[in-house]
Structures are given as structure tokens and as C-alpha cells.
Image (cartoon, rainbow, N blue to C red; front, side, top):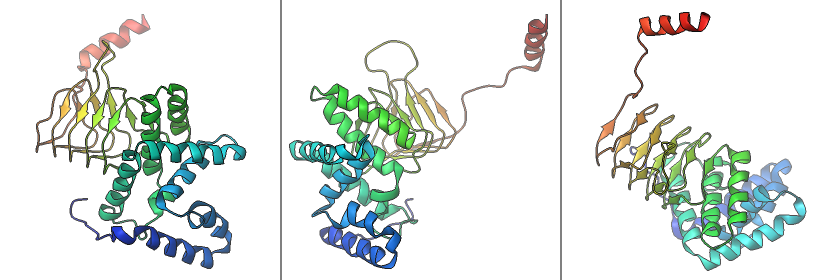
Length: 262
């Protein structure tokens, strides 16, 4: 990730997206309506984002326009939602070598779409619209296999690659420029109330299949290797690997098996 850096013309980003989408629509008649509906008919990236997510969140075609209006109103009331979504897009475009255009995250990346859905659920959660927040959370699970509690605080410029299986608890905090791969859990220990989930600081990297439990800190720019179980704080600028679990002694296993047979 850090070895690849693409330059992106941020001032003309939307115009570039329109040009690319129009080229695809012209080349592939089968996709022309799809690109027209999701990109070409909209005056801005902000409007296109609201529409794309509205189609995902609506449970009937008749509700898409209402959902779009609701999401656009939220972005108008809280500009940080769109600012963070744009930062997330730029993070993808600048650091993901697999992307060859400027619209793929918006249209096709479940991780990006799930992350932006969470930004709206978080807004509704803190503006006395818990029912909307929980509905969006549930749709995220069904659509993307991503379960983020509306209460979780997530910064900008987040890279959620593949994303399937990501679970993030209510009091978790993820600061800016963090990378999360698939099947990451930021969970509690199952005990107590209050502040009980991990805090992931700016620039941290958490590999696929990592499980982080409890109100502990993953320090700034720390790296956690894939498949690691983390139950203690990780210092800034360090890398950790390995599992916490220990193998069961063979004689204990045999004893337990014999006991169950008896």
C-alpha cells in the first residue's frame, strides 16, 4: 500500500468521473442505463453518492428518491459526512493499484459503500433518529457483510479493503488514514458497560482476520499482522504478529475426550 501513490487531480475529479462514465456508457449499451442512473444524471459527486447509497438502502424502487433526499439533507446539515466520503475515495484512488479509473469505489466497492452508509447511520444515531441508524446498520450487514454499530466513531481517509466480515463495536474509535482488511473485529470482551471497544489511532494498519478485543489502543502508525489476536495495547510505530491462543496439551485433550465418552 505505502509503496504505491497515484496522483489525482482533485479539482477536476467529478469531471473526470463523468468523462470515464460516458465512455463506458458509449462502449457498452448494456451498461448505459446503469451509468446514466448512477453517475451521468447527477450534477456532483455528492449527489451521485446519495443516489448510489439510496438505491442500496431502499427496500422498494418507490423509496429511492426519498432516501436520496434524506441523505442529501444529512450531508447539507453535516458537511463532514461528504468531506470524509471524499477523503475515503481519494485514499482508494491514490493507494489502490487495482483501480484504473476514478469511479470504481463508488459503484463497485462494498467496503467503500458500507463505510459511507455508516457515516449516515452515525449521524442519525446522534440526532435522535435511532430507528434510521439501526435500519442502515442492518442493511449494511445484509448487503455487504459489514457490521458497524452506529455509535462507532470513524475518521476520514479510511481504506476498508474487501471489507467482508468486518465487525466494529459501539464505542470503538478509528482515527484518520487507517487501513482495515477483511474479517477484522474491533470488539468488546463481553463484560461490563461503557467504553469497552478498541481505539485505533491515526495511520494504523490492521491485517485480514485480526481480532482486537477490549478498550485498548492500537497506536499511531502501528501495524497488526493478519490473523493476530490482540488483547493488549499496541504501541505507536510498532508491528505485532502472532496469536494469543495456546495449543491444548495432548494429555488434557485425551482426558477430556475419555470423560465425554464415559
